[in-house]
Structures are given as C-alpha cells and as structure tokens.
Length: 434
Ligand code: FE2
Image 1: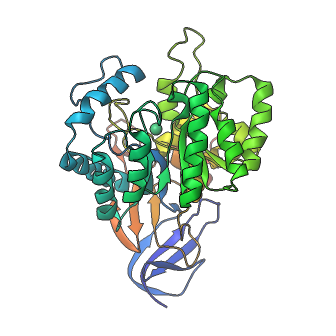
Image 2: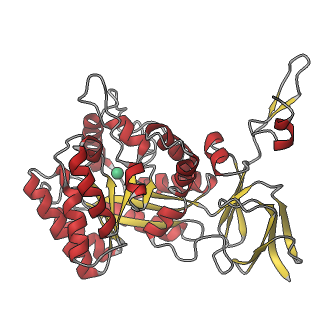
Image 3: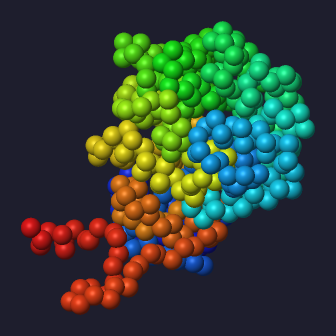
C-alpha cells in the first residue's frame, strides 16, 4: 500500500497498543499491527498515545484573549466580569475580534484541539461578533471545525432586541440555538425562553446548547423544561445543557427525579470545571460549594457528559491556554472522578463525547475516518491528563499542522540521572523497586 503518512507503534485511548495507522488522501486507511505499507512520511510513536483531536464544546471566542481590555477584572468576580464585558462590547471592532480569535485558534490547534463550539453574543445590534466569527469559521476551516451558537448573553427577554438578533444570527449562518434562562428576570420568563428557543430550533432543524442554570440557586430548574421540551419535540441527541451548576445545590430527592428525565430525553450535559469552580459559591462563606454539576451521577444514568474550557484570558477568567487536558484534570479533582473508569471517562469527555454532541462527521481512529489525530507524550489517557502531556504531533487531513518537542529537563545533580522525564517509568523498571 502506498500511503502519505504512517504512524507506527501507537497506543489508542481504548488501550490497544502496537498499532500502525496508515493514512492516504486525508483519510485513515487502516489501523492494525505491523501493516505492510510505504509512506512519504513515517512517525514512530514509540508506544505513545494517539488520540483523535480534542473537542472543546463550550467556548466564547468573541471575548477570548481580550484580557486587560479596557481594564483588568480587579476583583476576579463574575459581576465585575459582566460589567467589563459591557464596557468592552461597544469598543469591539470587526478586525480586532477576528485577530484575537485567529490567535486563539492557533493556540488551540497547537494544543491538539480539532473542533470548538463557541457561543457568540447576539445582544449587540451590530452583530459584530457574529459576523467576525463567521469569517473566522471560514478561515480556520482547513485546520479547525468551528461551530457557532447564537447566544443571547444579556437575556432573550431582558435585552430589547435579543430575539430578533438571534433570528438574524441564525439567518447569517450560526449553527446552534443558545439561551440563558436563569438570567431572565423571572423563573417564568426563563421557562418561556426555553420553550420559545426550542421551538425556533425545531422549526429550523438546528441543534440547541443553552447556558442553563449557571447559578448556585437550587430552585433554578430550567434543565427540567429543556429536557421536557426535548422529549415533546422529539429532539433527543440534539440538545445540550451547559453548566447545570444549580444541580450541585439541589435537593437530592429532586435530583434523583431530574437525572433520569435528562437521560430519557437524550439531553447532553456540558460542565465547565475551570469556570464553574471559580465563579460558583461566591456568596458562600465556609464551606464553599464547588458548583460543578453532578458529573458522576449523570454519567452513571447514561447522560453524555462533556467538559468545556469556556473562557481563556477574557473579562471573566485570566487563566487558560486552550488545554483540554487541564480541563479534564480539574474535573477529576473537583468532582472526585478518581476511579480508573471515571478518569478514562474524563478523557472521553474532552474527545469522543463532545465530538458526538457537535455531530462531527468522520471523527475517530477507525478506517474511513478523517485523518485528524494527535500524538501525545504519554502512554495512556490517565497519564496524558496527569501530565497535561505535550502534543508532540498534530495531524489534520493527514498533514502535520503542529509539532512540539517533548519536555525534558537536564539535571545537574551528583549521582543522579542527567535527564528527567515526568512520564511513568516503563513497567519493567518499576517492578524492580519495592
Ligand atoms: Fe459559557
């Protein structure tokens, strides 16, 4: 077989190892041990992990990398962040939003991200963010799938022209219907907004992803309406509830009734551990709530749970580097996902699960899939998360689009090794040390 690229001796996220991945015409042609093929380029994975790209299913690309504009969030709180975004919005220019978004996409690609779902604020009558990100979507398409959610950030009913703007954004090409029911003025307005937005999505045949119950208020139960409407409209598999942080604080009896409804309705859950941890629990003294949704219980009920990055260096969050392994790492700690199975699921929550939520076609490492993959300097998903492993090689359509050298340290100690790697020593070496 004549191929464009062969990756030899790869370990896959499902644990299979010693495999060759043969790529031609931008497609994975074969996966198996010792495949007899020739290629223009051969990469020896050396037993390291090869994964399909990371998928960030919850992001805000219209605000990313705007940290410090027009000033820094001194208190680091959500409220000052919202005020800051309000100050920045009128100052945004089409070119600046595009430039920052392209910069972020470079960072994301280097970190092995292959697809991003970004919410884009439609509460600016100019729809400046929408138009800018639609242009970015087209420009990055060769190396990154960008899906845009029309997001009425200031509230569908709280913001005078949000509904009209949202429809305009969908007409212009946004892919997904967003919402923010807990931010409407009353519970009833929140409920109504879910019903109205779901009707728009059903009518247009679009996916739905709402910021839903991003609050510590246990009575914020818009996820119930979202699930019920999903069931009523037959939209299973096409709807996601983002954040769902109020579920952290809900009464256990009610949660035990709600979780099966979410599962039956076929609604996916998207947690954003970095942001949920920093923004929730701010009215608490001690103990302080973590604010993360009930990840373990949702997963055990069969609900697809994915993790998003949400923010990187913007009015709400000064941290972040487009690293979905950092996101998974935080989720494991905050939600105590420490069983072997739960840690492996945390890796799936930044790869296969969000890929399904976005409806990405040809995603995966099976023959016939797009040759989009990442070689990590780790031996398995758990080590990858532990080390936030270096993305040694990022491949898109069978071509290398990013390379990063492995991290090594030269030690200058007496009677100690010269080079240090943070990777786990090979099993044989470990066995001799009891
Ligand atoms: Fe968000």
